[in-house]
Image (tube, rainbow, N blue to C red; front, side, top):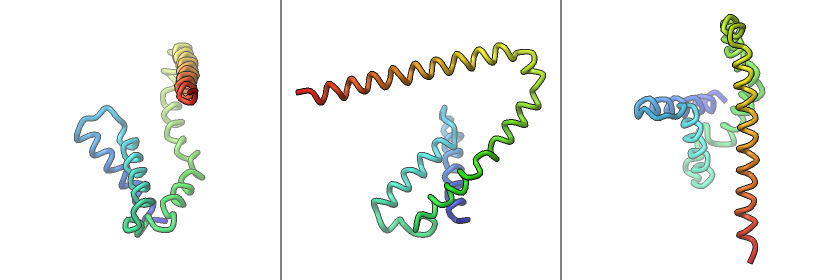
Length: 127
């Protein structure tokens, strides 16, 4: 379990180093998760890679352990919000309106993307 958790964190660290080193406009942990995905896909394809923490679903079990305590990862964000209550009091309405507008825009983009993709796949099925 410890080796699997270390592998997850190592992938995150590698992603962070690459992003900072190449000055990419991407969060390091996102690139790290992509690297972990590639590693897991390679493990399933090539048996020689399935050793150490990649053996016997070790990474999967470690990730399930992390997900079971996911709520703890929101504590620092909550502390940050409490520390900035003065800004929330001063700009709370603007923040709320921006958040509401971004939710609506996200929902519309999702619906339009779904409709576009369903039309594209629907036209391919027709003779």
